[in-house]
Image (cartoon, rainbow, N blue to C red):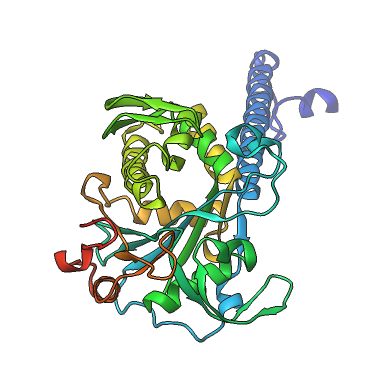
Length: 367
């Protein structure tokens, strides 16, 4: 037998039998097929991984972070002795830019104010929550603050609360709230009006039970008493209306804002987001692209972890309260914190979040 014939066969050098030529082709074909299959799977996995990474990066890049801790320093109230959390949630009324052009501001207005402000307290166990709304017209004592450019703004008394944001920035709003309440703010979240509108549209609208007929010529909002499913534009007008409800002041619309917040949270929680990845992404994109948070939450991972930790909070049991206020004696168009109710309210927040009825009474509303 020739050398070529002896060595022709399997790869381990054993002589091939008479049928060896036919059998050796099959393993090679299977191996080649396996290599092709693995290559395709690898390409698909890489493509999927690239898509996931791109989606993650896009959402993650939407979020704007503010280093509140660095701006405020160490002179702050102590943290809660429990695992409870305190959040300051602001709705910004920035009307600059094309995205805000159709939202009642004209698109050429510079600056912004904190149109809506809520201190949300989540007690230990994170199974319930209390939201305290601070009227935008409340006169407060603004502490000394540092702007984003490093310049210092001196303290001032009798400053309207919603002007602090435009004059000094979000870190000073946090510092002002901490000074007036002695409550340590753990996290800061802000969403502007354009983002609010897009978020409502992304989830398919929010149903609210309108407490009374609303005819607001300023915003164009025209609703009859009873349940209505509102789209983004209507929802924005609903939480901003002040001339169509109550006495036309900011106090009347706070009730609408609190009602809408609970309805929005309930709607989001009821949606089958896992069953619709496309819708989930749309909602996440709308929520993050106009979101500003403290540095600790300024990533998709941190936000997701925080949201999961809040999963036990039922919007249906969330308590909403307005900071007790009285009309200012010098300027009846402004309000001041009513005492001792306001101090009792903040004391309860610092303790365990159980608010006594006496701390909820607001002379300005007769409650």
